[in-house]
Length: 107
Figure 1 (cartoon, one colour):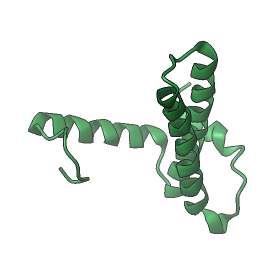
Figure 2 (cartoon, rainbow, N blue to C red):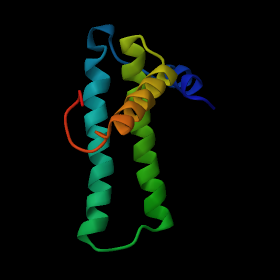
Figure 3 (spheres, rainbow, N blue to C red):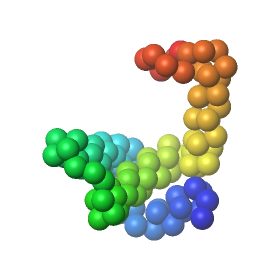
């Protein structure tokens, strides 16, 4: 499955009002990303290795993050493959200029 196919299929389960376009998936994205971080944080806190069960649980949360990314991209009117391509181009440009490390959006 490619990213655009995923985005198209995810759209079939995107149920929120048009008035909440962009807002709903942006808020959902932060919540789901927080759930991923929370599961990883607890592994660190408990000083335990990542087992198969926990790996799958984190993967499910990453899938939820992906769903919200797909919805937000759709609401922006941009397909996911374009977003992925733009991101890789940005990162390659930063790497070529030696500014891949550091902070700031416009490095």
